[in-house]
Length: 125
Image (cartoon, rainbow, N blue to C red; front, side, top):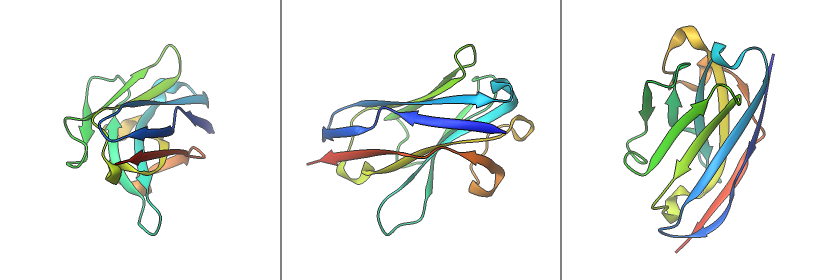
């Protein structure tokens, strides 16, 4: 079992920055591939970014590439999402997720076994 708790959401103006954190507990954090997804009202939950267990490899959705950075600190059992140059279209509920480390980088929702409760990000123009 893995428990995930996100924090760091809020309201910012376009062009601003936010840093999301996701604290994990349960099984060894390095056993988890981690990812961030987001869901806007009336839309499907979509992939944002993923990081494999060591932190050496990452992958991003095209819509956030160059603006968002995913990272992890295995000593602190935490994964982060640094979001810069935010746009109104980034407004959504953001969720972190944990999957099996053996999959490496995970972009598919169905391969994530555990999800946090979400944190709201609102970007105004």
